[in-house]
Image 1 (tube, rainbow, N blue to C red):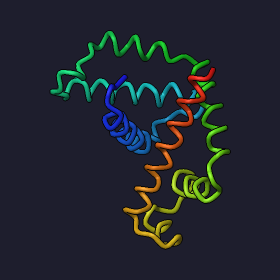
Image 2 (cartoon, rainbow, N blue to C red):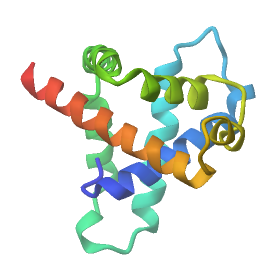
Image 3 (cartoon, one colour):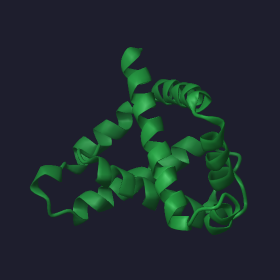
Image 4 (cartoon, rainbow, N blue to C red):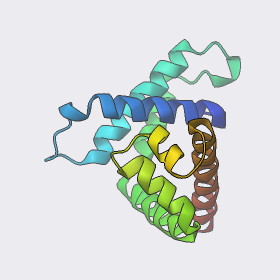
Length: 143
């Protein structure tokens, strides 16, 4: 929905932050992905409203159509691709992802435990995410 990958990554970060902030409002009896997608879609719309770049302007109707095209089948295919791509990562990279995204310890403590700065760990996580996105895109294109 966003032509610039950096903008998309910024939106992903903002969406992740909002998901954490609103976690107490999440109803575990409901499906997580639709809830998270709605928050992401709102962040995209907010970004497009704030954006002054001529090449980013999409109408809300187009954004809604793009969001509607993201169906459960595509989501399942992407989840499967992510699982396969995660399996291909070296063990150290998978371990860092698990510690940072599934664990309860902060990034600073994790960075210290593996002998790097928090900034270096953030950069390593960014590179791992880029690797995963590239792998997922290749797998999705192959299907």
